[in-house]
Image (cartoon, rainbow, N blue to C red; front, side, top):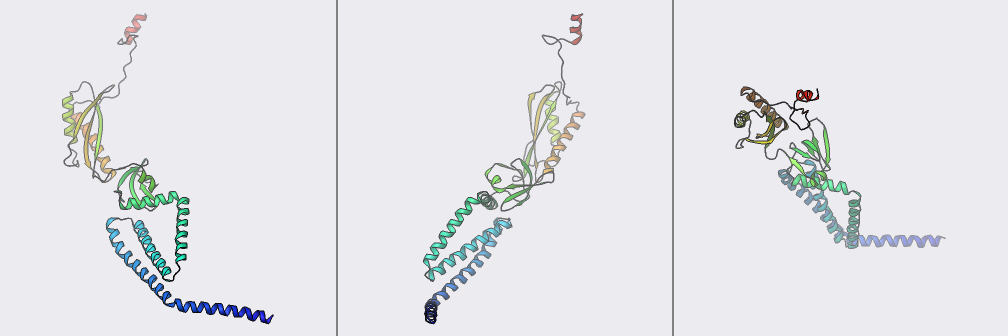
Length: 297
């Protein structure tokens, strides 16, 4: 029994001595590998600082900036680890790690398709999209001011005071309407006047009334067009542009236009008719009620 224990102990000692010898042989490579990892880590910190200054010049989304910096640092350190493993002659380990990363990435890609799509869309929107915090947009039937642009979703503050959260991929993949990018917006104000009014006079009075709005956009003409013969009025649309930074700019200009038209029409005896419905009592049409009653007497 003692001989068996002695043999076992010799095997363990020989194994440890072999490892120690191998460690001594590999010691220079281990030192070099450690230096490689430290060097790549310092390089990642340096690149992170430089890239941080560059990214803040082109985007204002702090979450996206941090994500890009973290991914960049991780990739640089990962390359350093791969080089260190190569120095230690652990090529098979490197191959296994790369294969494992690929399999894990593929599995995560299938499991989190929507999350990945939102993340990528958020990054692209932060880098390339003209949408910024404070802009007024309409997307996916939601109208409001962009409150935040995150990595997963964009928050829009609607006119009713509610926060509406829209996944980034829905904004990126679908059409959206950007109201503030050009700094101006057109108002199409529709109205109607009676058939007895002079149309040339109506056009002249209407244009003069709209031009009294003090905050009209410069270098934009006020346009007037008659559009149709309505049931009780001749209808028209007057189109004018206003400087637009927020929704009250549009609403105020629209309100001022309505007030100016009403005041100008009252001063010039121009009638905005109420809806009128004519009742026809004859079989062939054009007969009054009294005529129909006389025929039936």
